[in-house]
Length: 74
Image (tube, rainbow, N blue to C red; front, side, top):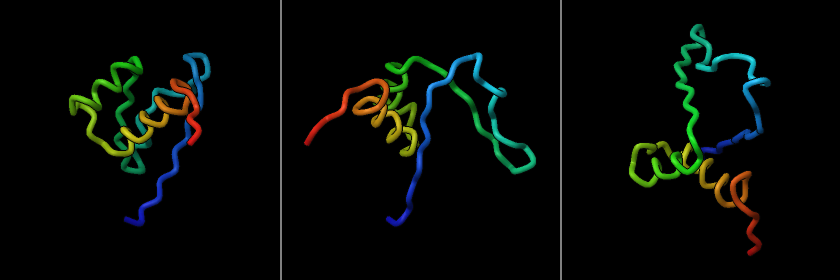
């Protein structure tokens, strides 16, 4: 596989949001914005409700060394 992905993660709050999300219709984007508790998102990966590899990778990063985890030294 030669695909390379780049993720951007940053904190936000209702006060810093600039829109409802969803992408740009004129660009053919149809993005569903879903906000849910982190533990529920992880459970959704486990039971198959989230099956998108990119989403699973980002949630794993967040759980292991991102904002919901701790850095691991190997």
